[in-house]
Each structure stands twice: as structure tokens, then as C-alpha cells.
Length: 446
Image 1 (cartoon, rainbow, N blue to C red):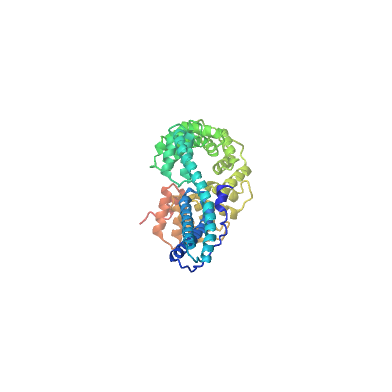
Image 2 (image 1 turned 90 degrees about the horizontal axis):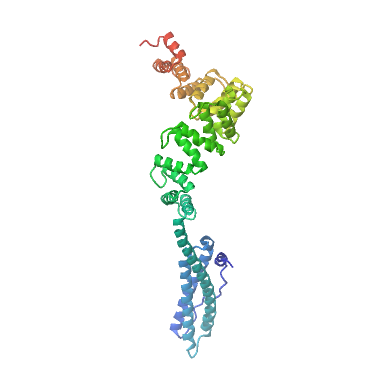
């Protein structure tokens, strides 16, 4: 029988007298009644212990409670024995009392023996565990991998209380011994300020240390640090080097960034065919950013033959994953009928999806849809709302259209001062239409 099975064993049915009997020997009767009270308390605790036993899972924390129950059983047994002996000396002993003492002595002895067996087994188990823990700590001090594993346990709260400070300590111990996984995790601790102060330079140092040992995640992150200048100076050639290593090992984000570098000619010569190749590799594995860029290459015929149907297909795949730029371009495909049938209602749907992610061009176009009733009912107030949203984010076309709304009182109250303000902003942002409107209506006049 296993330890857990012993703990879960149902308590033996214990039958004992609960009657306070008469005796000429008051001391014997008192001993019996005290034993009975203690016995009942032991049984109550014993039952509660058994109900909780599945929660303990042989936890050494239950030793103290187990010992208390054992002590109560032993104390009850001794008092029953004292009562039995004293009553036996009487000339006319109370047979009922003697009988109850005898029954209860047998009962408590059975429970006590079973509990002591469990207690001794559990004690031995805990002693072994303690010895194993001491040996494990000694071993951990010597083993970089086990230091890393302990750090992971503290980081995730696995078998111990979650403690980022302890996780950082063990990751650092392991990383300093050259363990690549620990170096990467230590970099993350510095990057996010977990268990230590944020320090992007230290983060980059450890990411690169890990990458130099071909840790796949670290290859990509080191490339990102160089690409965006995080914790180190921006360096496109170094970014290209690390992204290429990452991409060749199948990392989607590495393939995406490598495609970007080839497309923009950063860190390497511009090569649209290579850009297409790497975007395609990543897009096939559902990387939304690569799917969007692959759609652009098909749309523009860069690195491959122009193909509106393929462009629509990849914009749609990316848009469904929430890429705002893809949602905007998918809206244009539906509006113009590129790679699909024209559908202004669908176009408006995807422009809205993009605008909800703060795409200012999409917001401006939605304003036009409502203003002219394209794909929806004409609604000047909605048009005004979307023009204003886009204009406040700096879109020149929206600023011009918002100014006209104020000028003509469309979707809002007529307000020449506001009209002049927005139309002037628009032509200062190089809107030729706004400049013409400004001059034709002599808005420059006070």
C-alpha cells in the first residue's frame, strides 16, 4: 500500500461507550470520563485529517497534525488503563465501567497503532526528501542546467512560490557558466525588468551571448536589437546576419525581417526575388506581416509577376489575422475590384476594421463613403466624425474635407473659423485641393 493510499484509508469504525457510568471510585470514574473526552477529540481530528488527506499529497506539513492526533490517542489509552486498574481494586467493581474501559482500550490501541505506522512512514519519507533536497542544492550549485531549471521553477511558480528575484538569481548563476537557455532568459529578465531593473544593454549582451551558441530564439531577438537599435546601436548589416541565421532555421519572425531587409536593401543589396522568397516562406506558416508584404509584392509585381488574385488572397489571409495595413489594402481591392468582384459594402467593412486600429487613411476614406453614400446610406454626421478622427491624426485629405464640412455646415454647424483652421492645415500639408479652395474662397481674408 502506498503512502497516499495509507493516508486515504477510511478510518476504522470505532465503537466505544459514551455513557458516564456510576462508580464508588470517583478517581477511576474521573479518569474514564477524561479518557472519553480525549478519545472523542482524537477521533474528530482523525476524521478531519482523513477528509483533508487528498490535499496533503504526503506533504511533510501534515506531520505536526498527525503527531497531535497520535498523542491524544496515547493519552486516552493511558487514562482508560488507569481507570480500569483502579476500578479493579474495588471490592464491588462496576462491571459496566470495566467493560467500557476494555472496549475503548482495544479501540484506541488499534487506532494508535495504525496512526503510528502512518506517522513513521511519513517521517521516513520526509527525512529522505530533506536529504534529497540538501543533495539537490549541492548538485545545483555545480550544474548550470539544474540552476537554469530551478530558475524556471521560480519564474513559473512550479512546485515553489513564484519569485522573480530568485528566478533572476539562478538564471544569472547558470548564464555565467555559459548555459545558452539561461543566457536567453536572463536577457528577458533585463529586458522586461523581472527580478532586476530594466537594462536593455544588459539584455542585449545576454541575448547575443545566447545567440552565439545558436539558441534559435536568441538569433531572432539579437537581430531585432540590431534592427531597431535596442540596447545597442542600430546596425542593419548585423541585423541581416542574425536574421539570416534565424530564417534558415525556420523562425517565422526571422524570415519576415529578412524579407524586409532584402526588400528595402538594408544590410544587403536590394533583392525583390529574395524578399519574395522569404515572405513566402513565412506567409505559408501564417505570419500575418509576411502575408501582407507578400500581397504587396504580388499587387505591385515586385520579385514576381503581378497577380491581383494572389494579392487579394494574401491580403485577405493577413487581414483576417488583424493586420491593419492588410485590412486597408483588402478594402481597396473590394472597392476597385482588384482580384475579386467589386463590393463597396465589403470595402467599407474592411476599411472600418483598419480604422479601428488607428489607420488614418482608412478613417479618411470611411468619411468619403458616408459623405457620398458608398456601400452604405449617406450620413453627413458619420462622415464628419470620420473626417475629424483622421484629420486630428494629421491626414491632409481628411483635414481638407473636415474644413469643407465646417464651411458648408455638413454634418455639423457651419463654422467658418474652424473651416479656415482645417483647410489651412491641409494645404500646409501639401493638399493642392485645399490650397485651391483656400484661394478660390478667399479664406485668407480676416
